[in-house]
Length: 187
Image (cartoon, rainbow, N blue to C red; front, side):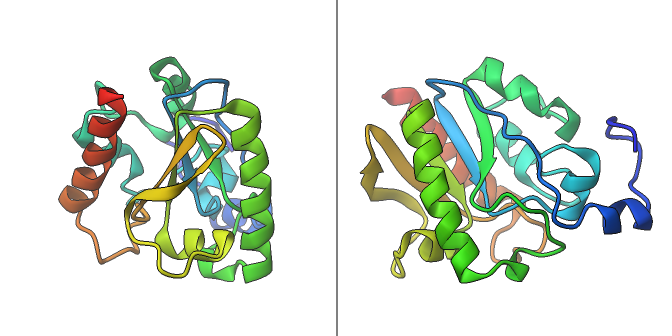
């Protein structure tokens, strides 16, 4: 499987990607550490975060003003130069996030706290309200800034950018991302 974004994973590539991991794009003192629920099979097959066509993470970043242009999934490391990174609540790839157990999400939440304490981003932005509720035991959480912090890191919940999330259009998703960007840029 090529690392370029123009090569489409074959069904065999996707099947082989089950339960793989995708390395974090992370460094110290980031403005925002975006946290997905877990990598999908496209991401596992390509090694790039939010790689599935139809995932709206990259367009939402661009439309919200986080990036100066639309980045491709194979350019995910460029986020570091912009003060951003990507991690996941759960590391293993699955076809759908609902294949993760509540125990996996809670364990992932504990591991995520450790990464946040180590790297100390200004904001942790979790992309998926249901995963956040389960991982952190916060059943009433809503989208937006959260009252709790992890050390000095503010916590923010954003909608899941998956194309399967029909509750948010790309414009609505980008608006939520923009609200976060404006809050980060005024700090």
